[in-house]
Image (cartoon, each protein chain N blue to C red):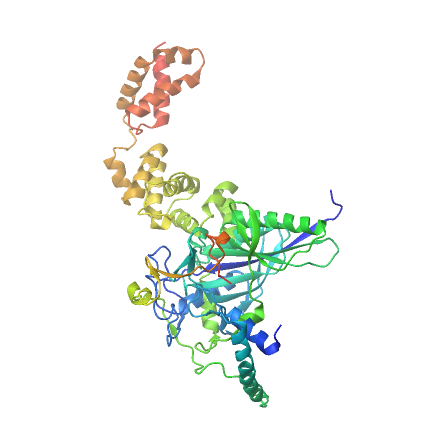
Length: 481
Length: 106
């Protein structure tokens, strides 16, 4: 055991693709998953003479992200060329922002109370994708080249993998809620680099190492854990840590030297001559400020205090803005006191359906059924037309077809049977089939009645009112004394 | 070490991923130095108080976020020296042990 207390110092750089229809400087579609090189043109493939034209919406979204993160917006900013040679960068330079980023400052306060400061956010274009085959060839797809990105850079304020993880979760939530990006790490919409060093407590900071290729939050945590261990072990063995870029290998759970990277001077940044400075006027700022949604953390608190939901339910509902918006629209269309029923249908049926294979939609907003229909369905359970169990069957149909709940209830014959004669007939058959239940109940075991209730509910196709069934069964058993 | 001029040629060539051998570097070194000397002459100009010109126009043109047709793939990839199943084939960009990575993003 060493006596030294080592303190990790961690900063994060997060690239986030903006949710535009088109690329940053040309009209090619910003879309993941297309056939390689089908979304390219002279601008994004860097043909001579092609000129970039800024996508206004990309800039608007970048501004919204900055406002949501509490950054200071610069009155004007400019683009610069960052020069380096790599096969996924057709122009030989990336259009980025160097000394005049569009915003600076800001930050995120984590649930623990820790505040992580942002140094800056700048806009830039994405590079293409290089696929390194087993052979001697690299294959390049330029569909991603020119996709708008914001790169947010934190101060080195974090000291553990848990803090870095919490920061990323919070950042993703804020960007998703602001409608800036889908933040889908599997599609590469959110990519993270880590800067990390360790130093003995009460000593100055030491050499930092950059880790790239972190394509999941889990890998960020694993890479940080591994790198802290590697650096401490090196120092304790009397070795030095080189300033370098390392690559995380998820299969081996370790980092290794990636490549020698250019120094900042080697990028030979200079102002992009094809793009004049970008001014920000007050009207645009006001408009974007107005489009900012209520943050997820505030929604969670409101669901608990105003709607009486549990912390767990509030957390599930706000895990994605689309879900929270759907829920709130349904609440607005409903009577008071239905929030819990709506929550159950959304979390147990809609979200479970989306996670399964039967439903084509991948987000709640894409479902054919709409919030007001969910409100109608809950109203049908409240006025006794259908049971809550029947409502679950109806919502499963609604998810597939978007048809109205009243129509489905009629078609599926799910109206709750209020006809006491019919209920009594079902109950008599059930008791005849299971005479042992009568003895058990008489012997004081009320729970035994469940077997008969199940039989009646089955016979009625779930449409019998469970309370009426229970009462009828108990009455029949009493009367048979 | 071949002297500052030749070293500058070799360093610049490495950054530009250009293959320049020592012989070529010795030829190019003095030529580099001569060109840079011209810029030093320009640097002597007194530009105190003069706004730097980095763009031709100061009026920013923007476009709306509407998709326009991309170019047919063959028109672009077909012109490349090594088209491969719709990709641009290029000489392997990273050492083999890094296979599968995406590299490059700075």
